[in-house]
Length: 407
Image 1: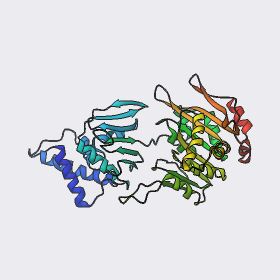
Image 2: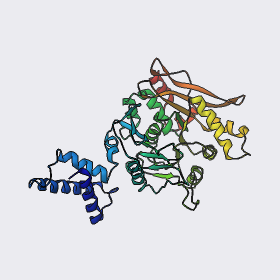
Image 3: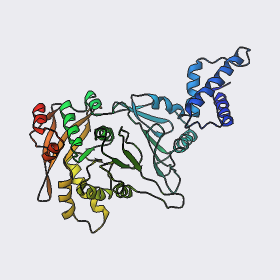
Image 4: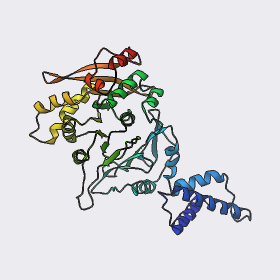
């Protein structure tokens, strides 16, 4: 009897007992143990060959029925950060920021089945009319699929894992992402209600840092977050999380991020957290920040300076009547601090720069001051002055003492 026949036995038992394999992996594990034990009993009579490794067989059965089959070991591996399929015979993973080709070889039908299984609990779909999809897997991992026809030859699949080992700023300090002094400053900035932009390239740790910053928001405040798919995970007693929705089969029902930002303002937020701004929703975010609601957001940029430039250009997509004459000074007065992240040559994610926005504009250029910069591989204090120093005072934070401790 082969593993495939044991898998069919487990699936039959799962169906017979009415178990949802995607939501009740524990029951599937018990069924797999029963099937393996029954097989071992039959092997005593010589009817079937004994299992070489019963425990490993049970794990493989659970992965095949309730998990992601051959990909499941990589999902369970805490060192793996991302998994992607370029074609069925070329499955890659990333560890420590470095890519490596795995020995996994799938069939085209297996890839289609895996995609269908991953999307089953997300409420999202992929088809010829909707060849792209972003979704969240039950474990909090982010799935992105590009359908065959748009992607040449085969469907392209990316699974970006949720990293649970970084829960707060102290965890990022321990990982070498930033210094304790920089973490203390960012913590004080969040507590005092400063608006923080987290920028960087793909996979440099923007969402991880945003989670850590959001975890520092005082428990007396109400957080409303909005993102394309649920990626933010932090502990807070008063938090409402919103995500976008794709259009249905009839082409209606789409909920864009811009709509969520507008709706968030009707939910009495003390703090806005936006997963990532990419387009015209940046205009609505600026209106919210300009109204005095503190916020935090991520965006893709190559430097802290470019992050501000991007925040000045994205709102222009909101309509022809939006002009740079309004946007530039609004960004200058709304954004307080920009934290820029990067990936070192050895794959380590680090804070490259923390900049303060003074609020001044000269020749349509927003003035900034560097608070922290990376020199000789270390994040050190620069000569810049933090933005809106009065907010630290109002929050009961002695900014002078904080900066002296960092000197």
